[in-house]
Image (cartoon, rainbow, N blue to C red):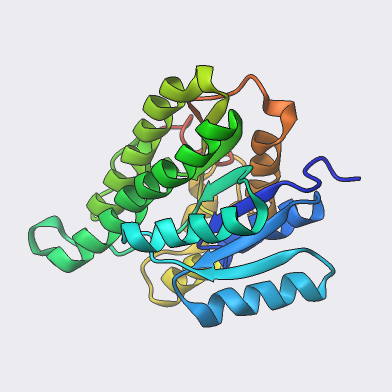
Length: 256
């Protein structure tokens, strides 16, 4: 028996990276996961991997920027199960560049996906959870939301907003049975990180040297903390953000 047996869980952006790692770990703990992805191919590939491993998972297409798309996702899950136990807001992307020339379309895209999209999902799922009188919402923020990194103005602003949403809505719903928490990963070994390394934007050596533990994080190290926070073991934790960063922020949140 897993500690999340039967928990109906929506994870946005679960097709790859940290999102898929979270989906895999929560499935192992007994949750039934809805992989909510904007890219059907990515989402269906993730579900195939999970179901072939013996887990319960299914795909639903969603664009978190669009209220109707989010509402359709929530309706589909409620129609199928009658409830939603856990929501993981993970969908994200990263585009960087000098602020004075930063393309507005890249600004709007990141804010829409990682800030507005998080609120839309919290609002739509929150209505269901408040009616149930229970539920857990976990937002994936970032250590970038806790300090200033040059050329990451949109990404870091969105993630700082997510941390604030977590605190504000977490306090608002605390007496109504819904916990709202956030995890702020440090630099983590994902396809996105590898792409930045391949493009010469970053180097693993610099990230390793900048981290007190001397290495970047692994996806499952983030997923383990997520599992704890959405479980009953974390029943007294709400309206707060947990950093999982190898000591990065404590050492001073300075760019590499």
